[in-house]
Image (cartoon, rainbow, N blue to C red; front, side):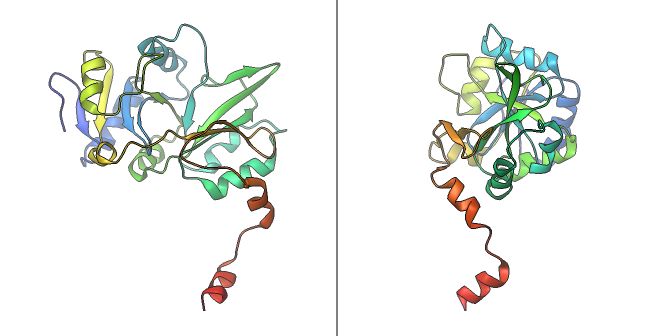
Length: 230
């Protein structure tokens, strides 16, 4: 999978993870497949990388982005003490999934947004095994945003991304034939988990109706499942 004149590799290639690690370590921009869309990605610790994403998309002022993590435990160090624990309990069951959770954080992270005198930030554990393998390797969250100019529709194929951004010297593209061959998917559901029950901010691939009831019901143990199936 190549786009002429661009830095483009198949994300399934055995060398792709090593290359993506080097690109991100150099604070350059990687276009990576997720479980919903391609996304511009930079290390979450890189304020310069976040500014570069804003420049590529044509965003004039500060705004929040989604941060991809490999597991729920990777979110916990960032959370404010008053983050409602029921939200995190729910996410432990729901992730990985196309569900973006806005949570209270203790510090003004590069991808966070101010809300009154507090800070919130969006997190997601993507349901894309190869991407989670990359997150495990780099051991740092990835800021991610759809690949498009601000106000335009997200670009869904590497060919379209190459036409729009292929001449940018610091943008490296990693293609996923499986993602492109699937029927067009809705984006991730975005929900405010700073309170309970969560409040849907943008409908998407995951329905949250009954989230509080599902959590209150508690998990079904393996022995219970076995007895019900016998």
